[in-house]
Length: 236
Image (tube, rainbow, N blue to C red; front, top):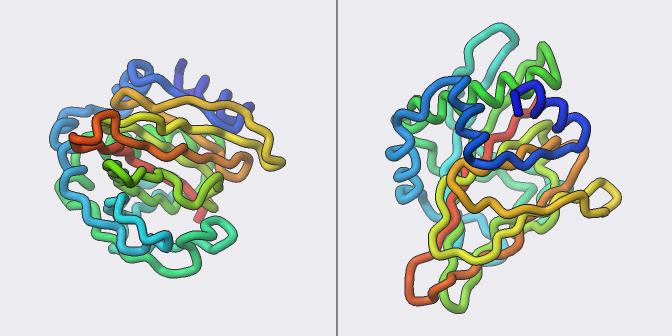
């Protein structure tokens, strides 16, 4: 499927699941993944999320903010907190959450630059001439014996933005983690599981809810994690 085809499908259904092989081809049209190995390895350097109202110690993350004005390049903004109202995140919302920044090496690297360009091109097709506020989140969800990991601890939710990309980076020794999409009346529209690096979900956040089931280790004696990059675009 081409980028215009993805845009049409996202406009029609409110979400699209893109398999890794197809996603790799789409990203290649926007740049290169030359530093993918270093990019993926950076998930081992994430810091513990200290804002978990459920007391969980299963989520690590880093965060960055970018901006894109019409006709201008995407630029990184000074580090700032992530904020969601409690209407969108009843568990952890309502406070400014300061997370460790995505490192300069990763933030300016080939892979992340390519992902941002792909997203900007796609979402510009759906909302031309928009000035975008862009947030990036590196998430690692860990699971261990006696403690499942919750990719979406707030449950079925919207993020309070316009568009969302969820890109799988790595999945080790993990069971479950099923993504489901629901309309605004709560009816399920579809479900799928991100299993291969570069499997992706694209979501029109104003039109649908999304959530992911808890994950658990296949072998409780071994480390288990699910690594994703979440990119959100909101009209500024």
